[in-house]
Amino acid sequence: MRPKQLLVVEDNDILRKTLERYLSSQGIKVTTTRTVAGARGLLSNHSYDALLVDINLPDDCGLDLVEPPSDSAIPVIAMTAEDPARYKQRACDAGVAAFFEKPFRLANIARILRCVFAGHRCLPYCTQVPNIKLIPDCSRF
Image (cartoon, rainbow, N blue to C red; front, side, top):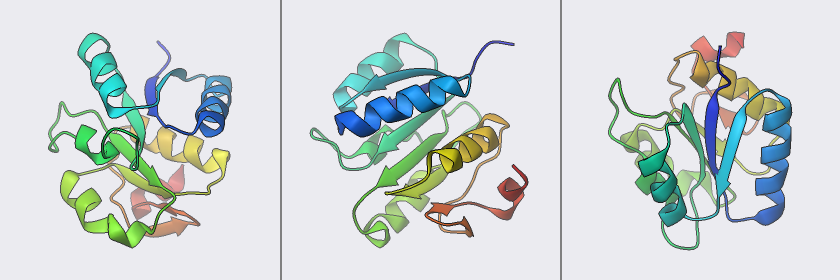
């Protein structure tokens, strides 16, 4: 089985490198970029199993990378350090797979990625884990 492919879009250098190191140690093949433009370039040339995207990026809103929900859409996990209520409706409408509030625990990211990689859509704003919004179906991971 090939390793799962994850694109991380995060402008904070420390967090981006921390995510890359930790998720790589979990057996995930991680590619990183710091902008929406960089992500679009990578998405046009590579296939990913999921995207982990900061909402507030230097060049655009990370939610702009979310495709309308479909069987072929890449699941997007969004995260923000700002007031999550500000983005709740837009994230729900966009069809993100999950929504993280910063700060968060790295182990919780691995947990939600296992859920997403298993094919579950974790609707935002259903609480099961602190700072991560999951649907009950994902709580078994």
